[in-house]
Length: 265
Image (spheres, rainbow, N blue to C red):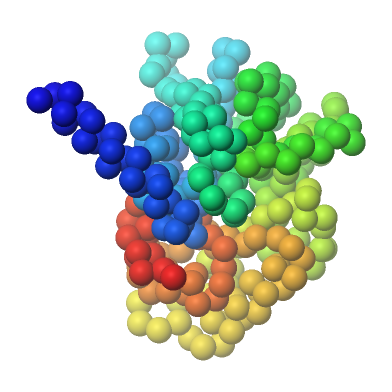
């Protein structure tokens, strides 16, 4: 009985993944995953892009925004929660993380202090997964399925003073007019509150909608993606993301918002 039940669960999960391409949701999940199970569930919900807080603690990278109180903590490592489960998908699906998915897959890392130490350790921990990654180091370019990005320009400059970085950069609103190379900065993230005072109830003011739509078009003209962060978690906001043609919304409530995109075509 248990074997039959397990087999049934595996079939359902396989079916979920097979439908992932057409059910892709325009969401970057900013919830810190605690296990590989959470990432696989996210893929099953059509959410393929992630943001995580990482900290260097005693020789490893852990997923956390804060230093734990005890050395006996149970925090997940970046490899356990993100890199290994993504790589497992990559190998299982013949060098595709999501079968048939042609969009960008981003893993955005927030470096919580010690950026140089995090970068050095990241270089070590990423090595076994290098065939999955998109990077350019010392003039050598490798096109993979996953791009690792950071937001902090100062941190990236500090890292680049040591050696050329394999990391990409997430831009902000002020970067749009700078027209930086899309290979270096493939994604722009804009805070919802920088665009409108609308709270997600009723209709968004038309002038705000046209401003957002024009901004999205400007970013797309630079061959970049755009994500709107810190949005209210309402269906009206999901509708805004779709109608404005924004690529993503960044949210810690990814599972809730995914349900509002179920009818996306």
